[in-house]
Image 1: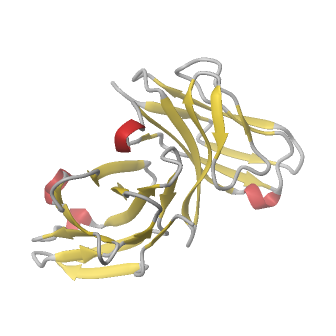
Image 2: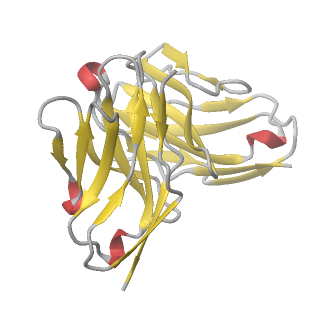
Length: 115
Length: 113
């Protein structure tokens, strides 16, 4: 089954404790992206990757890191989480964004709480 | 600056009636526009997109959207709403960079029997 998986689905942590949220897709997609969803703000793009070893900042990259060492994986790293990073996080992938791009496939989401 | 506005936080409609969920955008160059739907505790699902061509775009589950360049709008429509259409709807646009996406704040659609 074609899908985007994220782990963990739920996470409660404390300020300053490094964490990683994994994202994996099995569709051989080139483009991958991370979003955060907050009430009243919709989805905001954190980072995206056009392909392996190619990443770039979205609209709200502060406090986050990413890497793309393999085509299928795109982990999101919070090196020193703070309470304002409490949010619902989504990973997404698409086959390409050239010429307008294809639709994105979204993972099920990771609900993160930073105390 | 690139942006998307969904002016209504919530839209209420009776089952069987037509529905419209509004979206306006601001983007440099030609816009690439998308609609997504989110059901409770789920990720977003693609509904339809406008890249170029016909201003009326048809998508999944009987939804369609009309691109209006002069009004910079991309409203989502359905001729006859179903209770199962109740969900959160997001409009999105590809930005000037062509690699970044901008989403609206979302509109909650409530369809009542």
